[in-house]
Amino acid sequence: MIDEFAKIEWLKARFELDGDSNGILVGIGDDAAVIDFGDRPSIVTVDAHVENVHFRRDLISCRELGYRALVAAVSDVWAMAAVPRAALIALTLPPSFSDGDFRELIEGIAEAATGTGAKVIGGNLSASESLTVTTTALGTPLGKPLMRAGARPGDAIYVTGTLGAAALGLAVLESRAFGLEHGRRFVERWKRPPINGYALDVLAAVATAAVDVSDGALQDLGHLCTASGVGAVLRASSVPTATGYETSCAALDLDPTKLSLTGGEDYELIFTAPECSEAEKIGSKIGTVIEGNGTRVLDEAGEQIDLGNAGFRHFA
Amino acid sequence: MIDEFAKIEWLKARFELDGDSNGILVGIGDDAAVIDFGDRPSIVTVDAHVENVHFRRDLISCRELGYRALVAAVSDVWAMAAVPRAALIALTLPPSFSDGDFRELIEGIAEAATGTGAKVIGGNLSASESLTVTTTALGTPLGKPLMRAGARPGDAIYVTGTLGAAALGLAVLESRAFGLEHGRRFVERWKRPPINGYALDVLAAVATAAVDVSDGALQDLGHLCTASGVGAVLRASSVPTATGYETSCAALDLDPTKLSLTGGEDYELIFTAPECSEAEKIGSKIGTVIEGNGTRVLDEAGEQIDLGNAGFRHFA
Image (cartoon, one colour):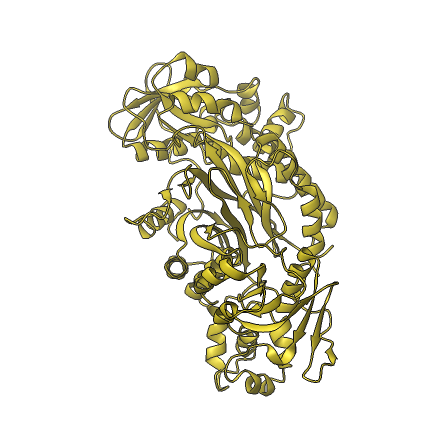
């Protein structure tokens, strides 16, 4: 089977917008679509959490799952520099899913709805063989929607928060290494993606392009670079990580640089902007946009680090 | 487990809109939600097609499934008297799903996108254990969004097209009764829900309430009546059915009245309106709205017919 991104390329070509745009400003291929059916654009995006693909039920509670699924969907709205406003939740529930599980799932969704500002306005319920939470999120751009295309050579590359903590948390969960110092904090970080609404004003003011980190920073930055027709150089030593990250990686025999740049599911925002103090208020500079293509990661001596063909992709 | 509608009631209460509406005009509980983030309302709804719940892969091709999934989702947009404009498609694909299957599925979706006017502007792809197609559909109301609430005692009850043909087609498929006269036509009717955009002008002009028929006409009309705080009387002999419907039901030992009123998946539109020739241009009168609650079905002699507690509901 061709992989996720080959399928997306094919879909992009198949559903290319024609002259009659019908109020569609941005179609397939960015973090979210942009529509304008009246006098003001809206953002709309959909994201699925699928049992045994995105989560295992023995590793996350129903409440945590609900929270995580909604914040992960809203992350794509933030990545467009848009304010989340509404969400629709399509659930498929297996026979083993109890009424108590259902209520816990909904409470998690409700908590995330309050936290993100996306009100739950609809959805769909279906029986199924496995549990899925598919979230449609809608929002309003603060200014011009912030696309993946728009990065220019010379722009600095920033990331909000820290990278690698979610992947580390999942590793802690999977290896049941709860005794690890900071272990439970990393687990929390995997279960509870960050609320990034605080970053919107700055993003709208200074960013030239943005993408959220769901499949690994390098891979997601790669999408931004491809869309912008540019390349990137990253300094591994500049990648922000959480307290205790290095020692916890060492304890679990994980490569901290590789995990932070390819681990995925951080749901932080990578954005490009002319280097400025405004950008530094919400993010850490991790590299520079260059002419050309591809992303090179350099160590402290300026030598290139090879992280392999990394990042998560479905059907690979 | 509490059934689908008990869950929806619970969700409706949990996510009741508060004073700060955030641009949400209609939340959970109608065919679709209504948002207004600018100067003009939009309709948004989500609908899932789940393997072994809504379809079996041995009974429908990938292309037919794609077509059906998108039209079924758009049906909720039409039921709000709104013009479909855009759709997002979230797919979960099992390992057995080939690239050829994928392309066929997408071609079916593309055909329905052209037929309905809903452009595909985004979506999500995920690996999974089973095949699901979850469609978010967006539209613009022609006038005021047409709700389930609004029917008034004395209104006539109309339905577009015919009822029962889809359920009959599924019965033909499941019993492999392809030799039946009209058999393949009914199968087509199950596989290809109707394109009901032609009804919008009249709906917007005269209808007081509407709902689409996805779970069985009686059950869906029941939702409309509950939302409107009214009851209904239907004449079984007035229910429109397709050519060959009665004889085919007889051949398969199916009760034609019960199948037409409880069979589901017709994706026709039930609407209420003051009796008028405009309404008759798009629908057949099948009954009358009355004060009170509940729906009574009468035979030609005016005697009440008991069709049991019928209609499809998940988790029942």
